[in-house]
Image (cartoon, rainbow, N blue to C red; front, top):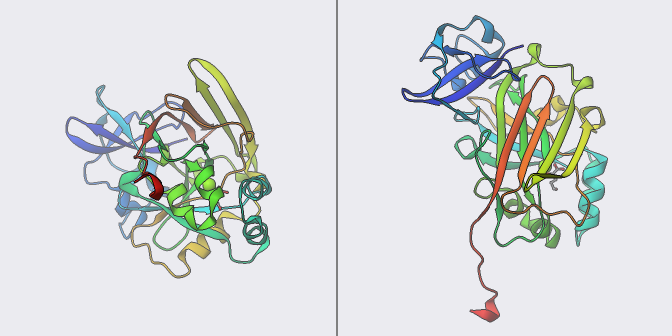
Length: 291
Ligand code: DO4
Ligand code: MG
């Protein structure tokens, strides 16, 4: 099983190949880019094992989010568990109930590729939010033609207090500094486990103690990833492909909120592990009456 890794090296950003569980081992030729593999290049992600190699991965390197110019989008309320949680937290539960069964899914813009955070990089919780959760999600990698060519783990970090206050605040609950985790590598469809066997695990550690763990199966996804990608591509062109997070089935109990310095780890056999520390980001704007 091979994955496509994006690395920071002393010679700049380079792509590498290696198993999702073992890490990057072979540096790819410098002219191989994610944009070409997902766009109109001669090679595609499916050719990963045949791409030219320039040598071993240098010992000194950092692992970056495996994304270049791609936009990252996300689908929501795609699992019954997520629908129920949104209905519990929201002042307007009806929206979530209806979108779960509607023909048109909820699809929203999450982040530009350059904003995504890779393994080990901090993920953010907003200073003006009081209820924050990780959302471990299966990410699908779509090429420019809208075909699913790979998978990646994603973390759709979210503020439940901001979204719960008013569904129109969704973009602020979802898109802020360091709100999108992605990694550790892109796994071509042929090298990934069959979708019906995919199980995502979440672990949250606070000060060395595991405070939350859960496993969910991708089988419970209410729509197929192909259907979600079709909707995403229905009126938007993606010349270098796109990444779509397919929604969360994992909702910690209502009294759970992330805190600074928690460690969030998302994993799936065959896709690897995405582990990140949590930090506070942004600033609090005073209420109008306090200004
Ligand atoms: O409507 C809110 C988005 C929910 C979401 O991100 C999810 O279900 O994963
Ligand atoms: Mg989500």
